[in-house]
Length: 253
Image (cartoon, rainbow, N blue to C red; front, side, top):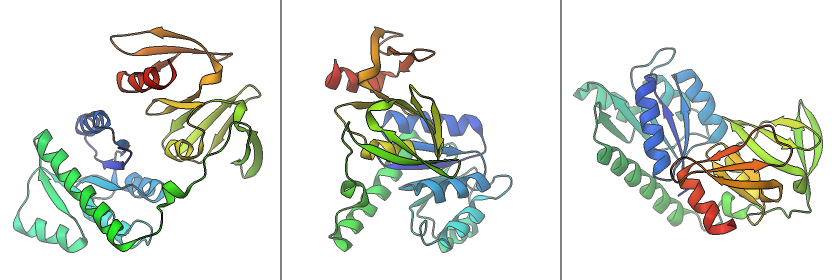
């Protein structure tokens, strides 16, 4: 799975628990702690599904879905509401604004996963029926290790060789590209980099890290089934989570 799911939730423990659960299921997860940040992030990453709390500071869940429904790029994204209490009026209000489903806190893990799978499956079927064109993701061209690409840094274009990229570190919608010559902060998601980088050289080792295997000096066993990678001329080892360690072992070790 590679579907992007955005969690908008002001309660950190709830937000963190859902994030961990969905990452273990293989989803690409993004989070925001209030409605205002959630709206901005949704417009930036265009997620496949949004999980949103109803009662939040700054902007509540109803304001979030109302704002996103007015935007042509985010209109129609499957929307799942979370709420501590719910009545017929609240359900009607949310559905009228375009919500697809409600879950009442505390909810069961299976109920959440089922609701997500149903909505994503329905969306995929609609796309297959109404669009015979290849998707944007499958239409993107993979780069070659010997290619060079332009990235925008501080509003200026910078030409980078793919082979010179040692690793890429994500910070929400931004990424830091680490090379021997220096670091470059660019406004591009890690998922976008995964779409274009050559798979036989670059591997994702963490939900926020991609590395170039040519710069690996040493791979060490770490806590339980995780790994730790030492990268050439990089300040500290990179930890590889259990899920990504399995993929790394299968493809590169």
